[in-house]
Amino acid sequence: MKGYSEALRLELCKKIPNSIQEAFVELQGIVGSRKKLGSNFIYTERLNVANRITILWKMIFKNSLSMDITKYKKAYRFSIKLGEEYLKLLEWQGEMPRNFLRGVFLASGFISDPEKCYRIELLPLEKTFARYIAKALNAIGIRHTIYVKKVSIIGFPKVERFLSLIGIQQGLIKLEEIRTLKLIKEDTNRRINFQESNIEKTLLSAERELEAIRVLMINNKLPDRYRKIAELRLTYPQATLKELAELLQPPVSKSTVAYYMRRLEKLADDNIKGKS
Image (cartoon, rainbow, N blue to C red; front, top):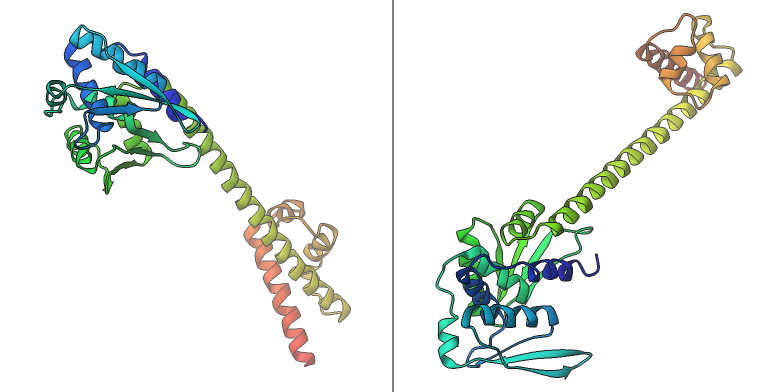
C-alpha cells in the first residue's frame, strides 16, 4: 500500500511525549539513525521528521535548533549540525527501548505493503548503530534478523507487536483491516479452487460412467438391476453422485451410487477385454 510507512510516521509525529525523558530517548534514536561516523551532521529528507527533531529539541534543551535546507535530487534535505557536547549526550545508554525504537522508526524505518507481506526494516546510516537497535529489540522481546546494517522484523505477530510498543494505534487498526480482508480473500480463493477441482473431478468421473453405460447398452450387456441408475446418469450427465442418489426412487446413499458406477465401469472394461 503506497504511503503506509509515511502514514505511520505521521501518526508518531503527532504524539506528545509524556515526559522530557521520553522525548530525550526518542531523539537519541533519531540522531543515532541519521548520523555518520566522524560527522557532527544529521540529515533527513522527510519534513515531518525534521519538524519532530526541532520540537523534541526545544522540549529538551529549551532552545531553538539551526537547520539548513538544500535541494537534493527531486526533494529537499534537512541538515542539522550538532555540537560535540550534544553528540556525546545523545548516545543511547539502553533506557526506555520503546521510545528509542520510536525514534529509530521515524528516522530510518520502513514497512512493506501489508497487502503483500508483513515486514519492517530499520536501516540506519551506520552498521555499528544496528547493534543498538538489536539491543533495544531484544529488550522488548522481538525477534529480528540483521544483514550488514539492515535490521528486519518479519511476520504479522512481530510487526503488530513492534508497532503497538512504539505507540502506533490508528495504523494498527488499518493493518488489522488489511489482514482480515487478505484472509477472507485467501479463504475465498481456496474455496473457489476447491470447488473448481471438485467440479472437474465430477465431470471426468461422469464422462467415464457415461462411456461405460454406452458400451454396455450397445452390446446389450447392461444388467437390469443397474438400468435405473444408468438411465439417470444419461439424463443428468453433469449431476453429482449425491444428486443422483437423491433422484433415485427410493433414494439411496451416495456411497451406494458410487458402488453402482464402479460396477458399471468394471462390467464395461470386462466387456471390452472379452471382445479383445
